[in-house]
Amino acid sequence: MNIPNTGNEPYKNSVIPPMEHMQYTGEDSSSVTELSLLPVFDEEDERVIQTWFQQIENPDKNNEVPIEDFISEGITLVMGLSADANQLINRANKSFAEKAIEIGKVCIRLKKLIRGFQKPWGVWAEENLPFVAKRNREKYMLLASRPDCWPFSFLGVDRLEMLCSVTKEMEGQDRIGDLLRKYNIGFDDTAEINLSQFKTMIDIAISNERLIKNGLTVALGLVEETVRSGIQFDANLVSVRPETPVLGRTLSSSHGEREGEAPRAFAQGCGKTRVVYLV
Image (cartoon, rainbow, N blue to C red; front, side):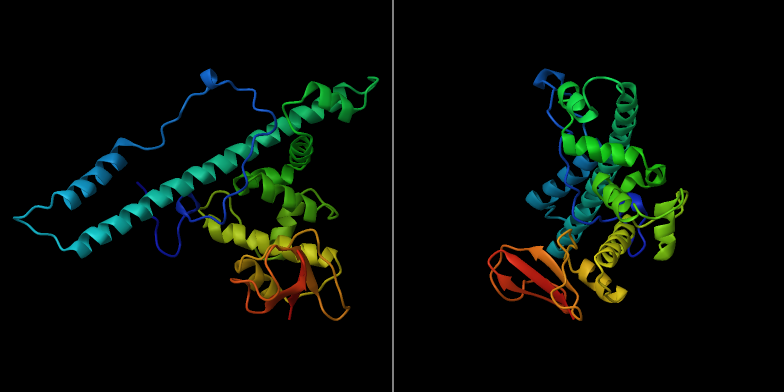
């Protein structure tokens, strides 16, 4: 069981941002009999937890332990198990991204091989690769075509796609590296990093680039504050007034402020369509 360090955890034990949306690449062609369950709960974890349970249920009357100690031990157990769970998610995201890139590489090569065939690539792929959804196929091919994103597979497929998108118009062979340098985001693939902090900095850079591409200039500190408050900058960026940068987004809540939004951001509008003013 891994107990995370306080304040400066290595990426393998860090608490990560909201879990990446994981889904099948397309149709799941695996039958139940082909599935094998991988054990992720080791015997040491089980022994420690069962010992804790037994101590609570059958306390030693000759050596009474204050209930506060049991509570403290329980908190430590949850902390360690959470670190283990986050490590599994991080590994899954990295493995998924690496597999997606490999799928994209093969698809790119297939696209070249079928040149001259009567059917265009899109139609051919729909007929011959039905087990990979069209949107995912396009996403994986994009990642495969951008070697500069490969070292960052630990960010997961979705963030890699966003990084490739916001750096699309940049020049050079290391566009993502240039973006990181632009925002002073240090990265060394040989050093341990706090994955949670790194992903947050990447999200801030992506959000600011999206604003810039939509002709909106917002203080980077405010963009950071907004991102850290959980407001996502999506593709629906608009500007209602030239002097007032706004972020358009779809919300299902009623009029007024949303609980948990950044102090300098508030939403207003009609129905489900809302705009978030950055002031």
